[in-house]
Image (tube, rainbow, N blue to C red):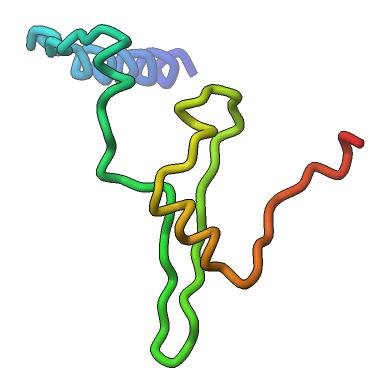
Amino acid sequence: MKRIVKTTLLICFLFVLGACSNAPPKQVEQQAPEQLSEQTSNIGLLWEIRKSGVASSYLFGTIHSEDPRVTRLPPPVSKAFNAAGNFALEMLLDEA
């Protein structure tokens, strides 16, 4: 039994030792919050779902926040909402 415990501990020690690295940590470019808020993302939250012969549908991902940068809808989103025949959204029924 002692041999199994010693072998297991040795394997764990070698695993941890192997995970250690001598490489220096990567430097992350620091930016001021003002610069971050001005950046735009190429990954949108509005997806168009298309199929031949069927009207397009849209799926819009949301973030629950009161920050104006989140609540202000970009023009493509407003255009899609205004052109939509139907609108569905999530609703929390337990917070009445």
